[in-house]
Amino acid sequence: MTKRQQPQSSLHKSQEAGYTIIESLVAMIVVSVLMIAIAPVMAYSVAIRVQAKRMEMATQAAKTYIEALRSGALKFGGAGFPIPAGVGVVLADARVPTVGETYCVDMDGGGCASSSNKDFYVQGAWLNPDSSITGGDPTLKGYQLLVRVYRADSFAAGVTLKPTRTATKQSVVGSGLGDKTMPVVEMSTEIPPPTVDSSAYRSFCSRIQDPKTNAPSTTACQ
Image (cartoon, rainbow, N blue to C red; front, side, top):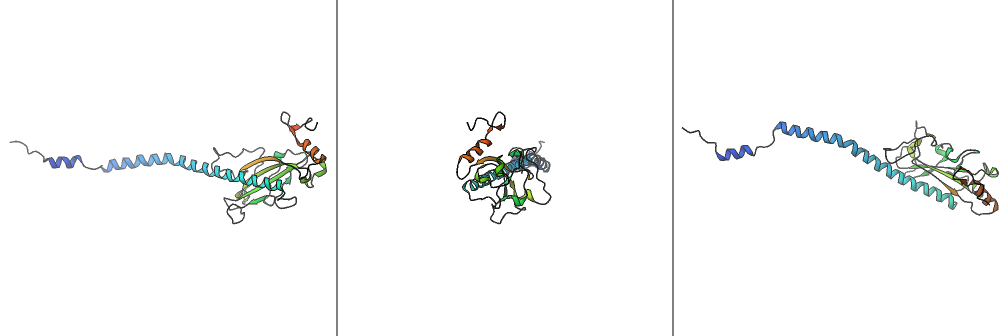
């Protein structure tokens, strides 16, 4: 007596059966492990994009500040005008500012506030070794200008700004969301006097440094 053969339709049903519970659990575990591995990379890339955008906006704020000084729109004695670096001080060693010594760049239309993550505070510091204008109006003979752009939350309670001469500079790569104790952007330039005369020319020559010695040039005015 021969064995009854299993119907062909039953064979097809068994071959088309779905995944088992164990196979589904293994698949979920594999996907979870992959997501855990990828998540930090995704978060890091987002942080880099945010910091890059912040540095771009801070650079625009610095350029706007410089143009305001060059055009005379921002005048000596007015709010946000550069502070003196001091006698015998290298411009890069200018002290960190208080919020009252900065220029507000309102990026969100609600006024500058230390709780904002969009606004900037711009610090300017000027240097001219001409002793006749120390503490006076530097615009008469021109000056070297240092510009630092800080995030608004750099002046929040409990934040202590670092001296930028010794601290690590901001960078897009490896900076994440950035260090609020440091300026986002720092740059320097020369602000010329409104009218050039012999005294302004001599003052400018005295500020020109020899790139080899970092000392005032002895041949610039010859």
